[in-house]
Each structure stands twice: as structure tokens, then as C-alpha cells.
Length: 362
Ligand code: DNO
Image 1: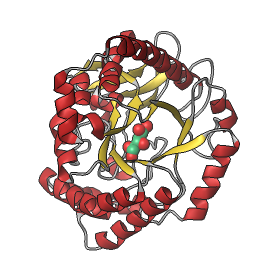
Image 2: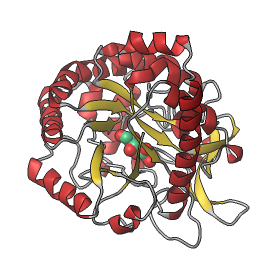
Image 3: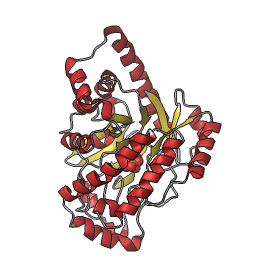
């Protein structure tokens, strides 16, 4: 496992020099955030970003994300040209030795919350989702933007929303499959592993279809193109908002197709209702001991990052992406991993079922 940290580029209030001081962080997760969906990511720009990261003593380990243009998700005639641009970006990152690409296939909106500053009883603030509040948001005006969003132009929103509301889930699956059939072989040749991010939250919002939501969906995804380059970002915070998702079991099923791990905790407080809590298991609904044990069992050796954190100690920054609470998360995860690793080495715990599942998916 390689501990990594997300950085939003030179405009991020969290400087690389501070990330470097968190014990154990080796890699940085970054992107060319200023480029709109559909544009080719040119090599010189990627090189410049990589140089900044390396100058801080870190490695550019993961691209999160090259956004997938909505025309591709809708299956519009322009998609072939846009997919070719996507392939070129994948080749470029592969040429520079960046081996993991996290992306998503959510229509129009990336991750969605209804509060970015819910106050917890310890005085910290956090992100939360409440379906009643969501029903009062008008999506055609664009909900409050969160970091990493690449929103389409406001004037395009009503048309896009209407087009996606008419697209049923099966058509969205077909369009995802069409995209992957072209991109995955290119990624494989370029030494890049694609890692789809589950929809966040993993259910339909604003009447738009969302398909990467649960265990059957992720198993279907890895079957769309049978290549190790067609994999998954295992996001405990997204998948963990649905009690029907058995996270450790899902890790064991997906095994070698998990290329990246996003580790954060959520407290599920009702049907499709949650807030983001401190990373350790006792504060939330995710059992990290069992999730990490499963990851260790299946031989996970890829990048992991603490995911969103609360705002603590008076920090002001991007919602979910401050320094302090994510740094605490990184330390907690490494502590757990160290203990699990020692246990694994001592006993060699590896159930035959894991080995069989892993072999079938390899
Ligand atoms: C939110 C992130 C997502 C993620 C994209 C991947 O904090 O996990 O925005 O980067 O969905 O494409």
C-alpha cells in the first residue's frame, strides 16, 4: 500500500510542503483542474505539474480525474472525437509514468452534498447529505459547487438535465461500455490502470440516472471489458452510505481490480441520509479494520488516500479538503495497516475463497 494525499494544484490552500510533513505520505493525487471536460491533457502541462510535486519530494502517483464529457455519457454523435481526446490524455499520462487514473461516470454532477459546514458536537464542521434538503435545490441553477467539480456551462444545464432524465440506466451502461471498449485497450498499452469512482452518493439525484452504486454494479463494471486495466477506486465513503453494501466482502470479490482506495468514514443517520465523520471506525458506519484486512488479504499494493476530512482547529479551506483532519486520517489508516500487516505476516491469513476470486478476476 502506498499512502497518498490529494492536492488541488498551485491554488490549493494546502501547500505541498505541508503534505510532505505528514509521516508516510509518498504520493500525490492531482489533476489539471482548469481544463474543461473533453480537452486533451497535453504532456508539457502534465510535466510541469509533476515537476512541482517532485520538487517537494513526492511522486505524482494518481490522476484524479480526467473528466468524461457528458456527450460520451449520453452517447451523442460527438462522442467518438471526445473519446479519442480522452485516449490521447491517457497515453500522455502513461508516457510520463503515472499509472492510475481515477474517473467517474456520473451524469452532470460529481459528488453531491446538501451541507458543507454541518457543525458536529465537538465544534468541527463537516459535509452532509439530506434528501429533504436536496429536494429544495433547483439543479438547473447548479447546486453549490464542491472541489473537483467541473460543471458544464450554466446555459447548458437545463438541456443536459432533460437529456439525462430521458436516458434510462441501461442506456447509460451501454454508453459506459462503448467508452471502456475503446479506452481500456489504450490504457493497457500505455501502462495505465483505469479506476472508476463509485457514484457519490450512490443513488439517483435530481432524477438523473446513476449506475455505479453497489456490489452487483461494480462486478458488472469489471466484466464490461475483461482487462486488468479496467478497475475500480474503492471508495468506502461512497459505498458505505448504503447499508446493503458489505464493504469487506466486496473488496474480496473485486480483489485485483481494485487499483486505488479512498478511505473515509460516514455516519449513516437514516434512509439516504448521512454526514462525514472522523476516519476511525467507532465514529461512523465503516468498519475500517475489516475493510483494510480484506484489502491486505487480496494483496492490495496500490495507492490509498485519506478522503474528506472535517474542518478542525480553526482551519479555513476547501470543504472536505483541509489539511489537518485528512492528515489525522492518514495516520490512523497507516497505524491500522501496520497492525494488519504484522498480523498477516505472522499468520498468513488468506482464505481459499479470496484466492479463487482473485484468480478468476486477474
Ligand atoms: C470527491 C471525489 C470525487 C472524485 C471523482 C472521481 O471528493 O472523491 O470528486 O474525485 O468523482 O472522478
